[in-house]
Length: 509
Image 1 (cartoon, helix red, strand yellow):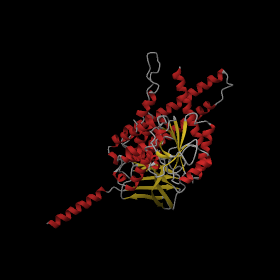
Image 2 (spheres, one colour; image 1 turned 60 degrees about the vertical axis):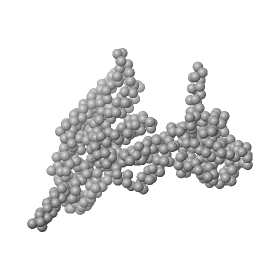
Image 3 (spheres, one colour; image 1 turned 180 degrees about the horizontal axis):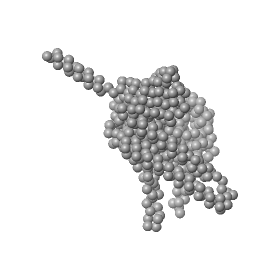
Image 4 (cartoon, helix red, strand yellow; image 1 turned 120 degrees about the horizontal axis):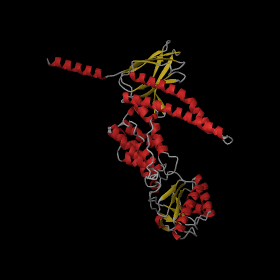
């Protein structure tokens, strides 16, 4: 009896496991293609990745199949010449048939057994129809705005205005027609991938500026602030299928690159705003795919920023998310990866633009002689309003060019007389080489220092992994510029000094 029960129990488990398996099976027939391979790919942000490859017979027939469901997303079926048509995978109904031909892969596509793809196909047809009608009006508007009207008479100008208004109304009417159609899809199929994609493409309606009783705008930043806070209102940040489309990543980039003031202090709070909103909507904590893939995308986006100071965003991402453990367990448990993150964070957190420069206790060379007036000093003891902190190595070929170049510009622009000191830090320990370099270049108007025992940890504090490296410190000893070439340092200092002079003059008045 016990043996019988065990057999029955085992059978039930096997049936249960078998029942849970939900395979995918996509039959494809493409007329005009034979005895070759087809690729099943998918969008992943700006990338297109391959999911599967099959062989099609002499009739252009083949089947993409597997024992498990495909992850939801916008997929592509590619022919050998890399032409493709798109299909949606957005639920567990992944057994269906597709037929088309090479003369028009998308236009001639027929779908059987997939309501999602039938709806998607109708949407593509509607979109193509609207585009075909809209394009001539749009092209005329584009030409009209580029037209030179210098020699137009009143009649010609009037005719031009009327033509522009007609075409604008046509374009607006067609756009509204398409939006209405898309809204119908969203209302009828709210859980579909197409609905989520359309949500990404719909712009938010921004109210007009608030005005007083006389019609004057009372808040000039209202539209900016509204767009900043409501940009994602139409986007389902909990739908991980959007990761396998081209629209979500581009929407994230548009928000951070074009919708926000391009300064780190404006961007950093919005990073936290977006990540928190994803946490709320996805509801999977730090394990959520939308959460981590968005975090990883932003991490890579600002890992090597184009503009000075934008590494502050990268440092914030490391410190606030990776170092604090706001990441999936699989990432947190990757010791080698996390050690790299923590090491990078330690080397960048103290030298961001806007932070207080770390003090240095170093050995100083006298101004007039190489043999006397040596002694210990600190960066914090420098009295001049501005400091250019330069790290160099006597054996560095680039340093041999850049440091003399900076010295020449320093003297030509009379920066010392204007309140700028150069704190020149030798990064090695060979005192004789150091003394010879300073003497050969006659740089006794600099504060020449080095760390003979390498006790100051300057390589970490100031992220010195190569030389030369420059920092510009203001009177409060905050870093206002870094890693700039000599001519740009002069520009920064002149701008700062000019601003200070204007403030002094203003106070006198």
